[in-house]
Length: 233
Image (cartoon, rainbow, N blue to C red):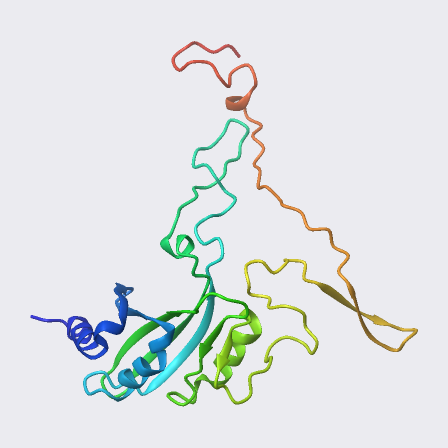
């Protein structure tokens, strides 16, 4: 017997057709990927086609795939000094050069099914993608949030301005290359009687987690002794 998810996947393939770049399953939901050029067209089809009827967009978020799968942790084995680094893995999003993406979580209230839609933004700075406000008005504040945090511009948005960060904020804090210490620091100046912005004084540094072993298993004289050899003390 065909499941509801199978039926939904078949209907999506029938409706979207050649515009599908990838269609996969995760956590009991479908994830559909289309090109940025066909975004609005596909959204209109997903909303208005019988058997799909995604009348509601419940969430929209930005993603930054900079250095995705390439962390600074490099090995998988524990070392005699008591700490190690994790495994580095690769992913096709990094090798393809695609950095920013927008994810839309869609809900069909009438048919009670969901769909995750992912669209990669064309390369360039600033990244630009079409707004879907004319399809789902609920995208208004979500698109402003993605612009504020990731610097993604939504072409056609009627009022694209920051929504979470302060006035005059520099940069976009959810980008992977945004400094953890920020660009400026804020303090109240009693002489001037107001809040002032100054260059950040924190010196960035990389901390390596380390566990110090103190029991006799890690004594210098016993550390590298072959297995099975008798041990003194």
